[in-house]
Image 1 (cartoon, rainbow, N blue to C red):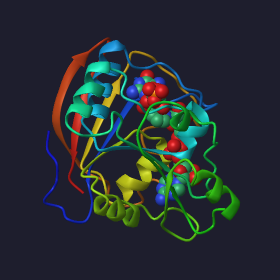
Image 2 (image 1 turned 180 degrees about the horizontal axis):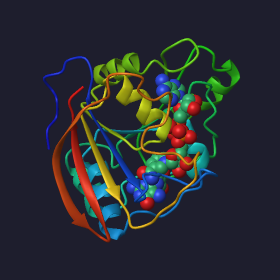
Image 3 (image 1 turned 90 degrees about the vertical axis):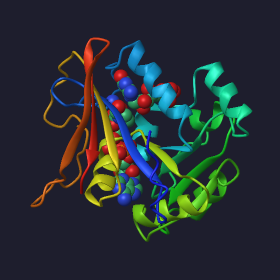
Image 4 (image 1 turned 60 degrees about the horizontal axis):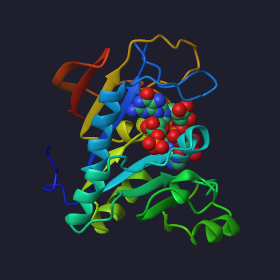
Length: 231
Ligand SMILES: NC(=O)c1ccc[n+]([C@@H]2O[C@H](COP(=O)([O-])OP(=O)(O)OC[C@H]3O[C@@H](n4cnc5c(N)ncnc54)[C@H](O)[C@@H]3O)[C@@H](O)[C@H]2O)c1
Ligand SMILES: Nc1nc(=O)c(N)c(NC[C@H](O)[C@H](O)[C@H](O)COP(=O)(O)O)[nH]1
C-alpha cells in the first residue's frame, strides 16, 4: 500500500468507513449501527495495524466511544516485534477539549494518544487531558487540519488512517488533505434526512472533489470500494 513519503508536509492520509446502501454512516440519533460483517472488521483491523496513527473527530468519540485498538493479538505482536507500540497513536480532533477522561481510547490498550485542540479550549480541561495524552494546539476556534497534519508528520507519523466521522471527513476532503478513501457499502438501508453520511459539512458549492476508482470487490454481504482522491 502506498505511503506518500514524497510529500514532506503531511502524512499519507486515507479514510476508512462503512456506510449503508443509502450512504449513511449512522442513524439520525447518531447511534452506531453494525454495517460491516466480520471480514470487513478484520480488514479494518489490518489497516489499523499497518498505520502509524488513527484519527477521529470528537463527535465519533462522544457517540461511539471507540477504543481504536488493534484487535488481533498476532498483529499487535508483529507491531511490537517491529519496535512499535502495539497500537497506533490514537488522535482526536477536539477543538474544545471535550474528550471524556473515562473514554475507551484512554482506558483500553497501550500506546500514545494525541488530543488536538484549539486555543478556545478551556485551560482546565486541557490540563486534565494532558495527564493522559499529548496535546497539540492548532487554530483559534476550530482545529486547523493542515497545521495539525504538518505537526503529525514532524512527529514521525507517515501513514494516517481516518475513521470519521462525517464532519471530520468533510473537513479533510474539502481541504485537499486526503489521498485515498475506502468504503464498505453494507446491505442495509438506514434512511433519515439528517443521518450522517460519508462527508457532511458545508458541501461543495462549485468544483467537486474528483475521485479515480482503484478497485471494487464483493466482501461479506456488501462491496468494498477503494478510491484515489484526485483533488
Ligand atoms: N460507519 C462508520 O464507518 C463511522 C465511522 C466513524 C463515525 N461514524 C459516525 O459518525 C458520527 C459522528 O460524526 P460527526 O460528524 O458527528 O462528528 P466527527 O466525528 O466528524 O467530529 C466532528 C467534530 O470535530 C471537531 N472539529 C474540530 N476541528 C474540525 C475541523 N477542522 N473539521 C472538522 N471537524 C472539526 C468539531 O467539534 C466537530 O464537530 C457518529 O454517528 C458515528 O457513529 C461512523
Ligand atoms: N468500519 C465500521 N463498520 C461498522 O459497521 C461501524 N458501525 C463502524 N463504526 C465506527 C466505529 O466508531 C469504529 O469504527 C469501531 O467499530 C469502534 O470499535 P473499536 O472499539 O474502536 O474497535 N465502523
